[in-house]
Image 1 (cartoon, rainbow, N blue to C red):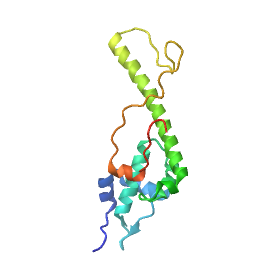
Image 2 (image 1 turned 135 degrees about the horizontal axis):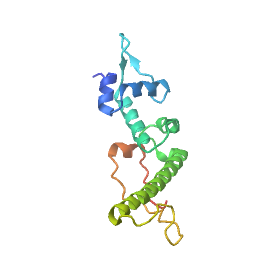
Image 3 (image 1 turned 90 degrees about the vertical axis):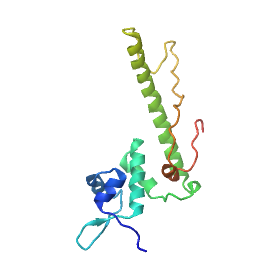
Image 4 (image 1 turned 180 degrees about the vertical axis):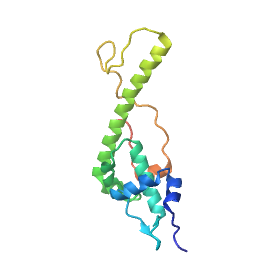
Length: 161
């Protein structure tokens, strides 16, 4: 039985990524060039769908496209122990995101206090009123990770590691 193939439109529908963006990913070699039918139309395979989903997942984390290349070069079922540099990069990226979340939470807290307390003066600096740093290490409750996302980063990354 032949492997199923998809048009660029079908790929876009399945991944939520526009055809223009898919073409751009091909142009910058983030996604391999698609095979073509005799009529010149692109054809994609299931592995292309998985690659685009990984790109979308990494993009949601704020990772620049160029920084994604090493992650895309490793298969989803590769042993993480064979790629310690990638584990360190993703852990570092995670720490950066946690820091951003803590900073944004301070802004949300500030807005909430303004909504609830009227014009009382408060700020949203990185220090508490006593001059000590606000709890920047405090992490929000994690969102459940889907099995598809977990396949790409199978190592447990717990707070404090």
